[in-house]
Amino acid sequence: MATLTYPTTLINPENVTWSAQQFAESFQSPFNGGTQTRGFGGSMIWKASFNYPILEQSQFNILNPFMMQLRGISGRVIVTTPQYTNTLATGLTATTADTISVALSAPESGLNVGDYISINNELKMIVIKTDNSNYKVEPPFRQLYTAQAIELNNPTCIMQLVDGTFNMDFRPPLFQSASFDLIEALSV
Image 1 (tube, rainbow, N blue to C red):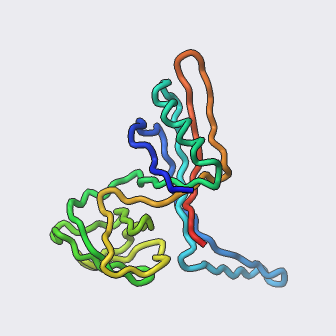
Image 2: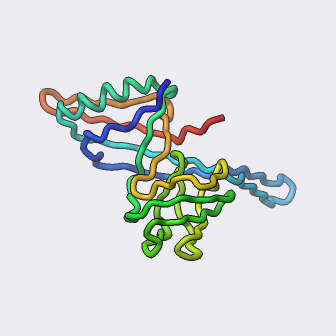
Image 3: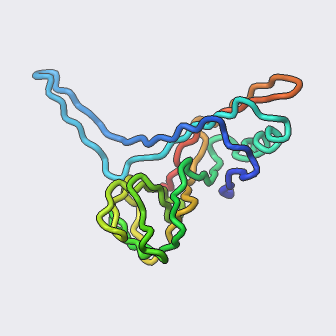
């Protein structure tokens, strides 16, 4: 199935909850109560909840068929982050597991801590800025990139419905509402 792009003709949702889920395991000893916790590097995924409490019929007629095209959890959609990076530069990058070196066309602009970027729809957040061309990102890269274009102004990731559910509420004759939850879709 082809990866769809989220409809740009839709109004912005009233509420988007964007979160990151880190996978870890914890063990508590039954003998002394001590706890061991282990995180798994690179195991963080993005989640998003969209809420459209009031949709006019024309907007609902865009969203409803789009969601049906996803066919539950089997469909994939390219989603843009709720916060856009305000960098007008374009760049090429080289990466290690959790760092990125960026050659920007306007290096004076740089990136800031908290900015989102994406490479090949792999979404990252800048968490440490070393200088205007070197940054630490989370989650770590799932593959290494060399001389790859970096998306600064409209970072994206590929997501799928969490449980295949798209909730619709009909309030005739004028309005509908809709909500759904997405989770990052990782290739195996």
